[in-house]
Picture 1 (cartoon, rainbow, N blue to C red):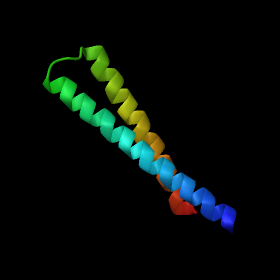
Picture 2 (cartoon, rainbow, N blue to C red):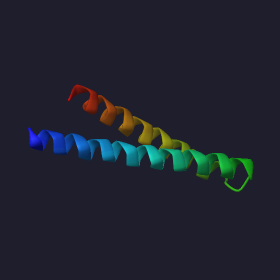
Picture 3 (cartoon, one colour):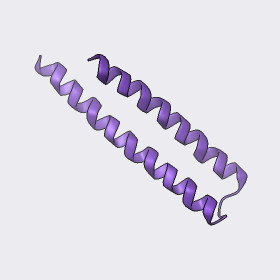
Picture 4 (tube, one colour):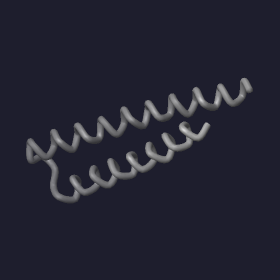
Length: 67
């Protein structure tokens, strides 16, 4: 049971880290877009990264809910 608790804690920590990274990417996208500092290619990369992070978070959240 201790191993399951340790795994849950690690997964929760990973979820928090991914959420922070996703928020940082979102903020960078908004800031760069507002300042017109990024070209369309950069904006697409940020959006793709944000989407991938959101997908990973959803999967991790699903795993946490199951266990």
